[in-house]
Image 1 (tube, rainbow, N blue to C red):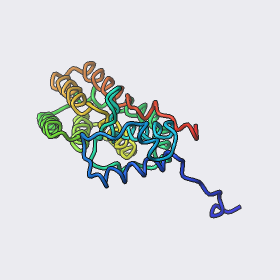
Image 2 (tube, rainbow, N blue to C red; image 1 turned 90 degrees about the vertical axis):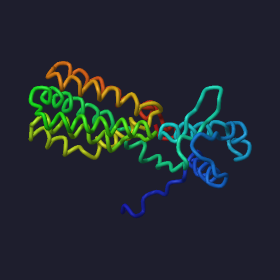
Image 3 (cartoon, rainbow, N blue to C red; image 1 turned 45 degrees about the horizontal axis):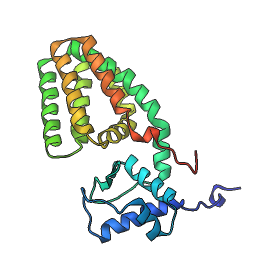
Length: 235
């Protein structure tokens, strides 16, 4: 059988709920900080079970689009519910643990080498990246580009062309893990504090402290809702 005649897939019910919620947010001109109707009301108005509504809300929460406050409702974290496909989420969840293992192995070593080999120019770029990240956090942004700049500065400061090449090979999945982490509620400010710890150890030339701080940071990057999420219809 050719690939073109593969079985057709039907949209899952809660994917349809997500689509309707996206339309609702646009039609009602809702913005970040506004809340959605209660689950019971959504289920009644959409003619679906509360389970389907809850699955849709959880999928949106995993993507950093809404925040569920226990006893307080569901609030928008973005102006639009531009949710990605569930297949994309499932694929990213499956490869994220391997990406985190690779980041821990590479970046922990790079941080230690940076503490040993950094130059004055390297330290200036690390500090500039921190300043840019602090500005992004103050503006309420995720600081994805600034986070990338900091890690690039640490990689440069390690002066290890081969390790830098390895980092380049996995740049795309690293970017995915970075975005996944930074869209967790409260994560940008926490990430900034951890990056400052890494930078302080590199400034001090303390290899063990730099490696320890980077290891701790990568562990935090892996503390994301996506890894606890399960698509009950496929898992």
